[in-house]
Length: 340
Image 1 (cartoon, rainbow, N blue to C red):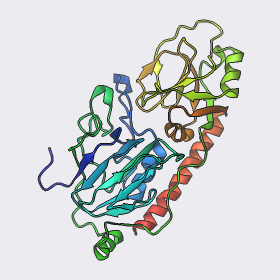
Image 2: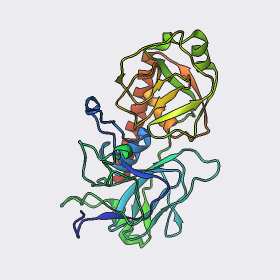
Image 3: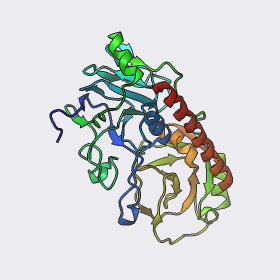
Image 4: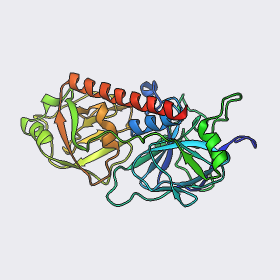
């Protein structure tokens, strides 16, 4: 229930699949509760940085076609991730930078232009969305119908609460500029944030615990042949179409905890990469783990996309993650300067 005086975001058009997500519901897999959270951690964290939020603030994850929304107050926002056409009062709104939008002006997400990059865009607002947390997280888990906004994707007419402004908080330069300009929105003057370079061709992975339980031919196929993301893929897992991967002999396993990026292979030999809404435990052989630094690239790949895998060792995967964090630290510095 939103208090009459509390700020909120009004949904005028929900888009194809718009969900509130944060960094996930950590610490409850032992009770069978999935972690969930943003599919693309880079875009989620970068968008929050651009508006001065902590990494854990909830954002709106928009898939393929975003919503049309408006805010009851002037709102600092940022959009990162998939390249969507975004406009306000008929003017194009840039992505990857801070934007101060006038209250009552609709923010319209269009479709992804032909040939553009990415599948999911992330809308962050200063202070974050203020839906009630469930088990310490505002992430939406659709199969369980909890978290986010009433445990579901947004619908037309929804009012999503925003965090109230803190009393005594100094006004931002962009707020003053918006008042002076009379424009529907103003943007930060500094450079825009881009996605990490690279494509789904060449996703790095480390061998899983059952790597050597697969035939030498299966392991060779995994690193030498392309796979295609199936149309049956979703936030729980990406099913891959391509060469079948067979074990050397049948393998009985006890179910174990799963992680984002685990590559499991069911009896049909078709690998599945577990994603943000993965189950808490699984019993299929684990062929590989996609390097965490490459998961945002995989999360932005649409069904029908061709992907390839490149094997690296644990140290290389850790160095890739350190570089990932170093790049986000640069985003943090840039965002801080832009909001000063």
